[in-house]
Image (cartoon, rainbow over all chains, first blue to last red; front, side):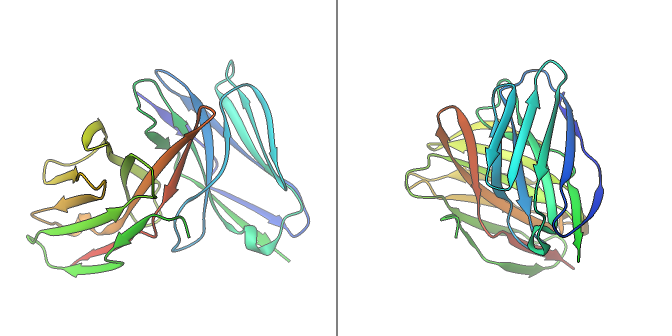
Length: 111
Length: 114
């Protein structure tokens, strides 16, 4: 089967840096994705790692270590609008690109 | 705007009833995915269609069914509804870019079963 673990809540202040970790267990693995979801909104794609290492997109970076079955999302220069839920998701073997999502991390950014 | 259209936005119905949720994928996307999100829960994968054919199944109840039509829009049918079926139902469509799997989500249909 497939399972993902990520913290349920993280709190930070504006301007700070926060890291959201994700560990996964999967019978096969193609890549790790991150999605952001504001309350009442739709998930939106943030980042994808298919290979080990760091991917940077503006203020957001994502890291993957396939040998450790571990990844993280790094959010820099936090803004109030970054308050949302963040989901890691794996694409596993035989998945035809289906995503298995973690339970999500609710990030609260305070002034 | 993701380009994925879901209708209706809200649906209120009673237990035992049947409803149909509709999804139009982004232009050119052949894959459609359905997800269920209960209150304060993660996204549960239900089913995937690719170019009209079922490709993958997740935790989809037997009371639920889906199909993808020749014009690539998809419908999710929920029958014999129970209170526990109240949730947000999302549709997504995907494109592969250099091996990435990027899914674009619609705004969702909020189903309330009373």
